[in-house]
Length: 225
Image (cartoon, rainbow, N blue to C red; front, side):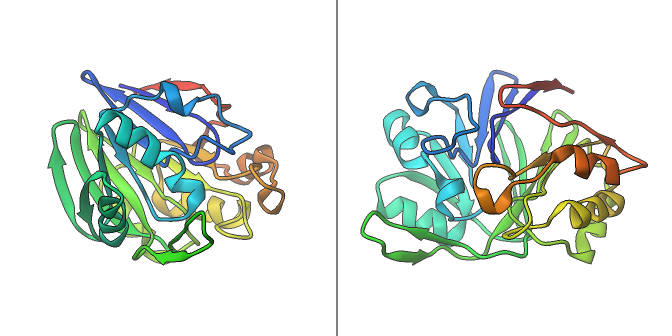
């Protein structure tokens, strides 16, 4: 299984002939190496409705008739826009042909802003616990630190993608505490440096994590697990 990072919170997973794309904020993302016109995933997974996570979902999914899995209210809204969707909610899991998706808590907010500056409520924000090829991948979405993260550590996490940008999510110190709670085999920091309010030095985060492995990934970097 290949897992690649593409700036902000974009993660791509390639497994058994399937490609999973998480939070494809491509257009307007100065840090990404992707082009929306080139992306042809088999499924798009969304953590919440903010525009810097929904990103290019509508363009990609409509063009390729791709299934979009999202928190329920967001899935309903995207369905109204003509997309093929599957709605889920926090605590729920479902087995797909590529693996199992479980939505977890995330302490944040969730809305989508239209081109007419209308704000659409898109339900609860969430994280993702993915079980693929007997590996567990945790994409925390946008979240604050919360103590119930300890429950996700009951089954060993192979790789965790954690936001470190501060201001809107956990900052480096809280993200380092999250690592101590989650105890993943590998942690990758995400959601930083895309905009001025979330500028961070990821090396500073890494230096705070003393007992677990951290890998700072540039856009396009790949991990094989």
